[in-house]
Image (tube, rainbow, N blue to C red; front, top):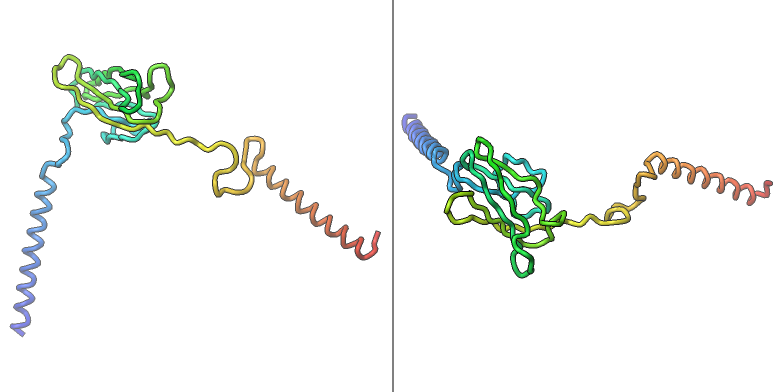
Length: 199
C-alpha cells in the first residue's frame, strides 16, 4: 500500500509545480507591456462613417470615412492632407484640413470629401498628418477607397418571386394570389359542367 501511495504524492507534487509555473507565467504575461503601440502614442486613424470614434483601430479599406485623432496633448492641432497614389494622376492634395483636439487630446473630423465632390473615387490614397507648430517629420497612412455598387432593378440574385415596391404591399400580393386561386377553381368547375353536358 505504501508503494502505491508514493507515486500519487509525487504526481500531486509535480502537478502542483506545473500549476505554479503556469500561474507565474500567466501573471508575467499579463503584467508585460504589449508589443503594439502604447496607449499614449499620438496617432490619426481612418474610420468608416458609422464606426465608433472611441475605437482606436485603423481601417485601411473604406468608402465614406472620417479621421480620428487619439492621445495628443490638449491644445494641439493636427494638420492633414490626402493625396491620390499613382498610377492615377490627380491634383494633390485632393482634400486637406485640421483636427482641433479636446481637453483629453482626442478629436475627429466630419466625413471627409474631396474638393468639389461628394465622395472619393475608388483607388489608393495617402493620409499625411503633422502637429501644427512642431518640426517633427509628418506621418502618413495609406488606405483604399472602394464603394460597393447596389444592384438596380429586379429582385436580388436568388430571391425569385415578385419585387416588393412601395406600390405593391404584401397584403396586395396575398389578395392577388387568392383571386387567382378562386378564378382557377371557378374555371375548372365550368369546364367540368360543359364536359357533362350541363348548361
